[in-house]
Length: 179
Image (tube, rainbow, N blue to C red; front, top):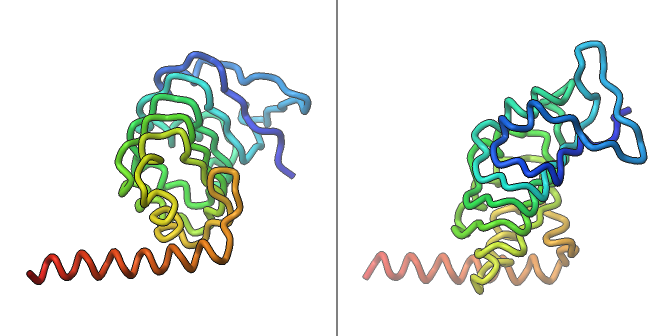
């Protein structure tokens, strides 16, 4: 059984290395450390901070979690993240990823997350990429195992429409290359 999420939200953290000196917020379920002074949790909240870079994410996860490879839920919402860093792709057990309310502006960077075999829930609304008219279709296409996006269930009809969009978009690109 896993413990409550390790909650480092609302700490005014700008760098992930800053988290290493922080004590997690206490919630309704008390957090207990194991003999190695790590938390037996599979969830990490880093939301509502000022984080811009994720390159120290693996070290941060290892610093707090007893089993860092078992991280399944990560909340990075409401930070100042501009890119979907490759380090997220190393979190192979990740199932839920919250990235809403950041400043991510390159829609194609979402494609990187397609390597996560268990990712079924993602939030990306409140980022610049949301203004791209292909936003929802693109995300549904490149992350085919998603069940929920932006707190909304992905319907069978949306999957069909996203597939049609992808096929149409692929044909348009290939015809431009051949001209």
